[in-house]
Every structure is written in structure tokens, then in C-alpha cells.
Image (tube, rainbow, N blue to C red; front, side, top):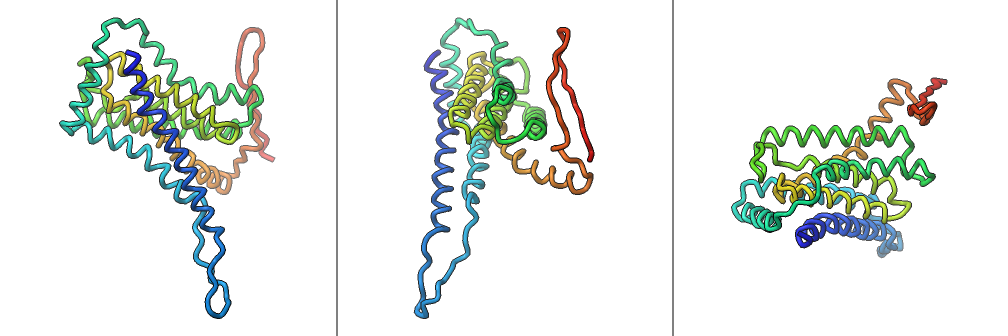
Length: 277
């Protein structure tokens, strides 16, 4: 069983984290290219080529990584070779009959990175965005992810490994976990890469547990991971545009909105104050 967990985590977590490292390297190369000393022509007049926008290459590749993971899952549904691979993974998992780990564990793990984002900020660790923006970003990400997963489950009708129903593809738990992991990575990437690594480890464990409990095929898990990451990346892309539109057209200013937790007489809540001036 340890081999199965290691294989799932080695395939998913390091694949994503290494991809991010590669993207940063490519991005730095793109920036360096814009800083190269331009050649000089015969008239000694500097020739300045059109400069690339720093980060453009890495931003495009950032979507390519999770899209490839999702594509792998889509192809696996109809590929005999990849279906055989799914069956091989399942047979290895089922080789151990003892199942001491409860399915409730992945139910809780999938949300742990999200809780951690707000908990770390509450204890003083600075995140990329303010409280209101973080809520909006995760809400958009979760909406994209959940709608995509639901529609795919309905459209594909893939039978689960245990035969319980036909909503196997993609893995919703894994999509939720990786959406949350990417959310945590983006919020604390400037603080330390360890937060992203920890979040992705949790997400990979969630996916491995879905295999362990025989409710998903390996390709379901990989596709779910891709959907989750892509949903959050898209959220961070569209939210600034939505925020700008709302500020300009409606006049709502998040900086005038103050939200703080409250606790009194054993009751927890939120105090919300908005000053339109």
C-alpha cells in the first residue's frame, strides 16, 4: 500500500511543483532576453527589438500544465493502453485487503489548504490578497471547479471501480483539494515555497486516498487535479477584471468593507461594516 501512495504522490505533487519551478526558470529567461544589450547597426544607431512582456511565457505555460493533466484523463477514458494502466493501478491497490483508513479522512483533507490560507493570515502571516479578495477568488475558483466536475460526471457517466455509480470521472475530491492547494500556493508563494509544497502534498494524499478506497480510477484523479489547478489559475486571471468592472460601474470599494470575526458568550460570528464614503 505504501508503494501505491508513493506512486500517486510522486506522479502528481512533484509533477506540479517541478512544473512551477520550470515555469519560473522560463520566465526568468524571458525577462533576461528583454534586458540584453541590443545590437548596433552601421550608423551606430541602436536597434531596439520589440520587447516581450515579462511573465507572458510562464503565464501561458501555467495553464498548459493542468490542461495536460486534464487531457490525460480525457484520453484515458477511451484509450485501451491507459485503461489497462488504470486497471493495473487498481489491482495493486486491491492487493491489500485491509482498509484501516476511513473515507472520512479525504472528506476533511480536501478543504484543509483553504482553512490554512485563512488561519495563517489570522496568525499574522501576510498573504497575497486581502480578506475580501481571498473570499472572492476562492468563490470563483470553487464555482468553476464544481460546475465543471458536475457537468463532466453527468456527461461521461464513467462507472466507478467499485461499481457503486456512474459518476467516477473526474474525481471531485481531488479537484477540490488541488483547487485549494493552488489557492494556498498563490497566496503564500512570496512568503515561502514550503506552503505550496505542503498544500500540494495534502492534495496528492487526498487523491491517493480516493484510489485507496476504490472509488476512482487513476486517470480520474489526475484529471481532477488538473481541473482544480486550472480553476484557481483562471480565478486569479478573471478576478482583477471583475473587480475593476465592479469598482468602475457600481462604485463598490472593497477597501471600505471591514470584516472581522467575533466571539461572545460561546457564539462565533462575523462583524461586517461597509462605509460607502
